[in-house]
Image 1: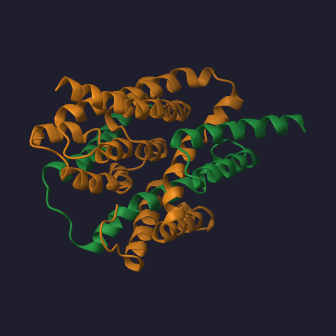
Image 2: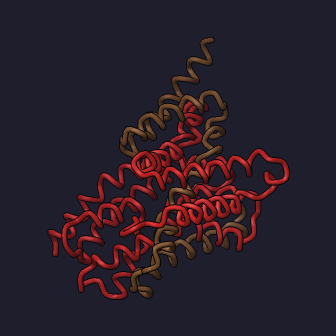
Image 3: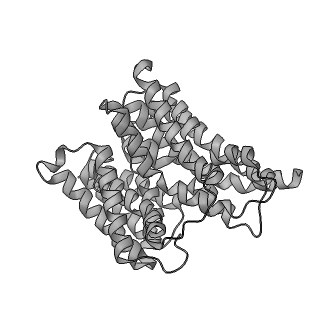
Length: 233
Length: 105
């Protein structure tokens, strides 16, 4: 039991270090947008997701409806549902309903990737260990960014503004290079997003709905043109 | 931000995010058979991240020229399959260098 917990914890350390830097940028942006330090940290402690939190900021600032917020989060985070379905098949009998409810809080892209790459079935001790460092890294990075971000000189702050987008590019480009369907989906979504930004009339649609429309339309077109033959993941 | 405005947003973002993660792992333990739905769900992250990155990334540094330098470096490294951390840090450094260059000229 102890060794599984330790093994999980160790596997979570690189994830936690990576989260530290990205959540630093989130904390800095949140405070720059008018949230308090405590509010920024609370978001990270309870959400533990990069894209959803970044998309939530402009919606909060502009006073968007709670329905728009919920729909935006649903679309952006829909990928977690697929990951949950996939990971569910790898859990051993120690993962009852309660354990699944606890672990699912931390089923992020990176934790999912590490957990599913483990050989054989995985149990609660490994997964609990795996959750710890990423959650601390994500919360602590937000705290440091939110509290100290404003102390940094302007040129450092503006340079850090691109960090999260760099991470997004590192997630989407390698599969887009290797797989034509992913390339098609990404290019379609980007083209739609550009239309919603620059075409008069379309550019009045609020940021949450733009993400929903672009995401759903591009993924649906992709699924229609390139339905996966076997395992799509 | 006022807490009376903030707390409902916090509850909705945290609640929706948690339910999406929790329900498939606990309630719906069946596999999705339909290949169109499976593909749709598999493509959603790439579509969402693509739409969130462009064109926003060009406005992320306060100067479209320095952002373009960051994007160029990030795309090059990401295309070669470098890690999330490497790409993010390199993009920041490229923006910092571009800012320094613009100050000099």
